[in-house]
Image (cartoon, rainbow, N blue to C red; front, side):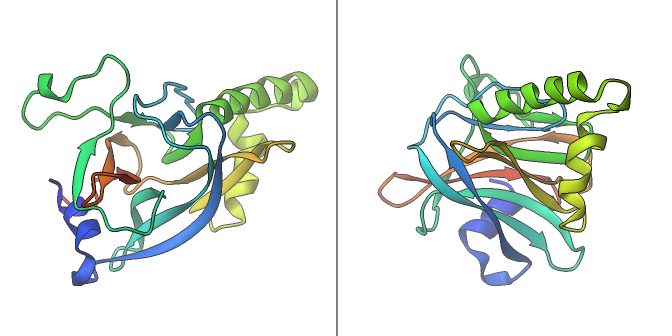
Length: 202
């Protein structure tokens, strides 16, 4: 278990501080964690119930950067962790020290329902069509403004007004890299959270 997951399971040391960012709307139950500007719309194998859940950033107190992002499904503390995998991935086939995760090339990670990630891609195509020569990129024409409202640390993009579907984005630790996510389980073996570890606590 990584140092970060140990801290989240028993946070008495006070290295991290939580900040609730935004509620995220889940309709399909199929969760995606990815760099939102790359938009890998490949959901995890495990599904969750539809609903609204808080997204929590875990800040490293001394370095003032986001060490982890958590999709909080319950107030119960996790006592066991499993690496989140996509269909076809098997953690038993990983070499020691290897992980399944997602690449970050823009300094951002996110959580979103797979339908929200799909709509984010649709928004980019629509902006490109509507703005024509004024279109630069999804980041320059939309996401930059959303993040600037929160000191470039995080933001929530509404991708469907009717359903409230949104993608919650956050800065990814030291920036670009390759990051794993983990399901947290309580004493009754219920899933209580999904956490992406940005490798700030090595």
